[in-house]
Image (cartoon, rainbow, N blue to C red; front, top):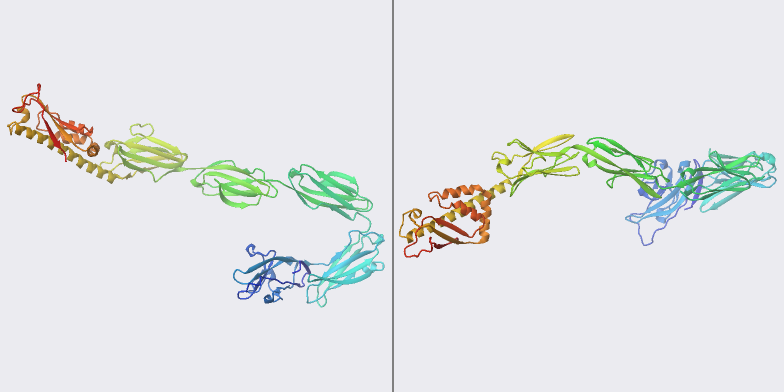
Length: 627
């Protein structure tokens, strides 16, 4: 397709087009063609000019486009009728052969829609030298061809006209050249070119004014420049005039340089944002003044953004965070909360982040990040959200070996204070109460309190479980809950099993002691009599109990769970014996201390018949085996 093509408004244009695709590919259900305007990639949603399989096109092309080529023959020639200046631009073709065989071609044809013909006027018109003025009209609509005529040429001396038809790259241009020798008197004279299409009402005109040998004819300056902050730049100005003009460089209303010459150079060192703007070169030769301007753009990274001061807000509040900065090109502004993107990315100098109905999760650091291709800068602020205390689900009481441990956890800002209440005992436990091992810890907005209830009377509950309440409070509110007891059933079962096991052990020891007593009575031939009351000399009998140490330790641990309760049971089992007899509770104490021997003492005992006395007392040993 031609790189450039032109036509007149309200007429038509035909864009010649052919395309290729790999020979090994066979079109699936035919070849489908699409013409796009502006760019060839559909993901950017360019306007659709033409589709071969549907009539769905952009509004501005409805009823105006037609495919003249045959896609099966790889011809994609397009006709656009009734074109307007809004149709000027680049046109791209895309071929769809079915499946994944879609070809987007980078080649384009740039259409220029003219509302008046072009007149070629030389930059320098010198008196007494032949001057050629050429008027051009495009001829790319097959319906009709243009005709060119000159207006006001009758006032010129001996004008000559010549026509030419140029066809290049599948485009056609008709031209008509006016040749004459200008005179000073012709300065300021109007000349016009008219383009008319026969059998239509379309007519286009353009007028020019002749400028001959008076004011400067051209003033040339740099094109718009982009430089980095701190660099140096040189601006040039060249004036084509006769006589030599006086050239001045202006920045706004300030004159920076003035010289009489055909050109002048302005050097700027260490430029910054204040030097960005329009620079104008003015040429004056006494016959008139001409100037030309260029824009100097100074590029620099974003300045440190301005943001709000840090704020402390109540939960449920609404706040607007502002961020402003400068940079060239204009930087994008991004809001981050604790390093995570929030809001939207904007390319404006001011960004506003609206935070509505703040929650505790809105607490954190908010950073505004400004970025452009030359660098980045950021500023941050902190948002602190204050809120009433809220209990955490970890708050509960738990049975431990020492008793009951109650933990209360809550979050709030300011950090909440924690108190425990024992309603049955009418006791409030806080940091001044050491009886219950009160402990507190804070971590940010979270507070933790803990107490240990070692004695059953401290636990309350009237036999129905632990009755402990926890209260948390700060300046925005307070809340109280009863702490639930966890693992209570499991612990009570352990107590019951331990109690039964402990009683069994003590009962076994008592039975063993009585068995030894009965054997001693039989050997002395005094059955049925009270052993203690009949013995005349005190004797000490020892029983060696062989047992597994690990088994005994388990039994001792079980007895420890019942504490003093076992002592009362053992004391009842020892009734009926002499008052000087050592109570069995002492044996229980020895049992808890893991001793390997049990002792029975008989006051006033007498040796067995036939046995010799050993000193003042006698001693017998009997072995008791525990199975």
